[in-house]
Length: 204
Length: 204
DNA sequence: TTCACCCTTATACATTCGTATAATCACCTT
DNA sequence: AAGGTGATTATACGAATGTATAAGGGTGAA
Image 1 (cartoon, rainbow over the protein chains, first blue to last red):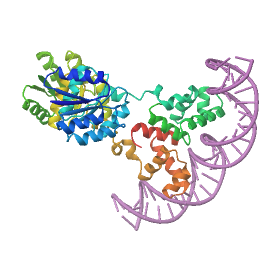
Image 2 (image 1 turned 90 degrees about the vertical axis):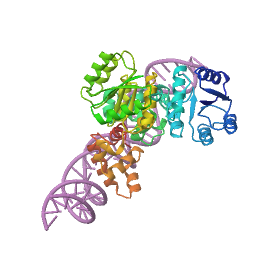
Image 3 (image 1 turned 30 degrees about the horizontal axis):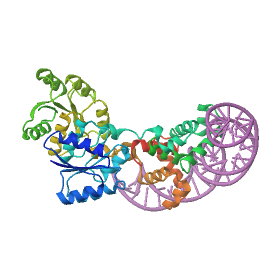
Image 4 (image 1 turned 90 degrees about the horizontal axis):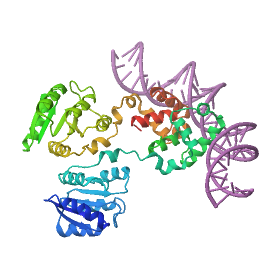
């Protein structure tokens, strides 16, 4: 089985390569950028599987993925990344990637995943994909103050301002202020829109 | 590799068994219910992989999964189903299943997935998992009329009644009626709540 | 301390929303 | 033809929401 690994970090690339080669029957070639990878494919013909680093010279997000897929003659192309989010992974798969490999995975799983993809299947680590974009560190969520988050939570339950005020032991007018400010922070037109944006961003 | 397939539909069970056996090096045994499967495991020792039908006598949703996992001595147990939803699949994986196999998958993929799971990995078909709980057939969604869905869509964008009315070329009062009725159908307290419920149910 | 920021409340007004009742029209089914 | 349902519009009013301006208190950092 012929594998091409493209990553601009020598260490990462060689570690992955070492893992795969050690399993025998897997022949690995490497590249340090998308351009180099495409050249290799042109020169050597399609690989059984190509692995591309997401944050790599020439990739331009997922644009490079498409070029590699077009270049590899129908054979699978997977994305490797240590920083990409589940959302990016979803996009990659939607864009035709054969799989998404976080750099956190074990060597054994890596080998299994590569074989799996080479067999024509699509691989995605369940535990990674299922991970919610993590409330706390979402940029929008971080901008909201504690109170605003409490109010937002009330909004998502369809509560009226007066009701939220009672629950938080505040005056209705205070809630109005919070709704106003949190809507502004989320670029929402009103409370309903604010809740939708929050829902889609993953918090709430 | 020893595989145990448990399904109460003879045809399905035997089809899967036939696919796996045809690949050689895979030894398949079958069972027609959870109880029978557990007996087999007790008698034969742990299998390399056990596949359980989700809608099978003795399963009681995912309860049977736990029993099989406890019984199979650390080796993987997967769920097979032709009717289960992505949400159920998620639950199954969360409950410790080694994978989820829709009955719609191809024989080739089935074999790959089984091997993959037997290697200790977790398998889930991306296209199935990513599928939204299917707009059209969601019970709540089905109750809404076409117009109500259009209005709901407007609500989710934070539009005012007047605005939605203009977009749909209707009077504002008409929108109010639709908002009222769709909120009633969704058991929502107001427009904001309605949007949240719709979002959580997967449509919109 | 001073400054910045958050939280709080007040007053006030315009707008929007929610609710109710009622009537007309179209379409489909029985 | 009769009846049911959905869609539409009208009128009307109370309630909720959005917006603006102002101001006092608390907390933490510079």
